[in-house]
Length: 380
Image (tube, rainbow, N blue to C red):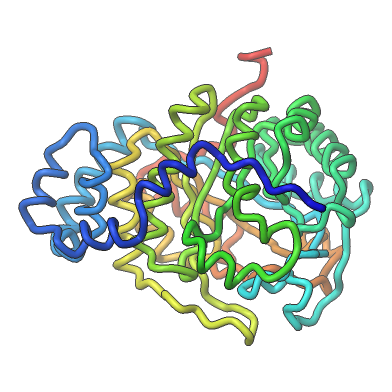
């Protein structure tokens, strides 16, 4: 019989902030509560609730000025650039919202890149100037076993000084093997922190284990991973709830994994398989409020923004706290070297500009695009 996963210590924090308590604070928040939050140097959880409330929606311009100032103070005028490589679209999980799910019903070739194909993809992307790479797989340890991912990281490190993964949840000793191969970062979305919703949308596979998913990013930090990125898949649950819990998780990781840099991503659901309905869509204005509230609560956290968002919105969000952007993304295995043109893609990128066009947009906004911001020689 399979043993239950050991709960993350962060579970206690989650349990102390149930849905009813958060909703009560958000519903009752007044303009005075928002003012008090905006005047604090270090925000508490109650302040975060005020900034996520309808009362704060009337003061976005003021929040934006403060968020811009905070970001400039911590990060200057730089936007880091990264690009994803999808190693495999084979998945044993059955997440109702994802095209890769084993029962999604979506058409397209299922494939896992060979080591030679990984190298070809790396060569293609390195020619564009990228130096930060994110390797992704479906949630299928048999299709993309740990040994395979270790090899993929080693290959990628020949071309990119910064290599991260977004894969299925691992244990600390497994992450340590990836670190030994040259891994720098781990991205792991909880998808939703709301337990009931989590159970409803994750129907099969290892990903059903909420506790294992929650604790994995902390295990990565303890294994020596230098960059930790988290986020909720916006649209699965009320954005105010998941935003609140995400912020608490990020602050917890900043303290517990203090040797790692913590970042937050804001992936928003748009096009989903027919069997899934986006129960809690959020508008552009609500996305902006979420990002501003989290920036003021987490002044030292990086903010990642992917090509899920349209070009014009991505350009405007540069000023509101974004520190890292993907560019020229393909969500098909083999999509850059045209080895996988018939492969199933996870989602359709909305911002289809070339890396060079994204760089130009960053410069027009008055920021400097940065391909590399760290070298392992500093710590080796």
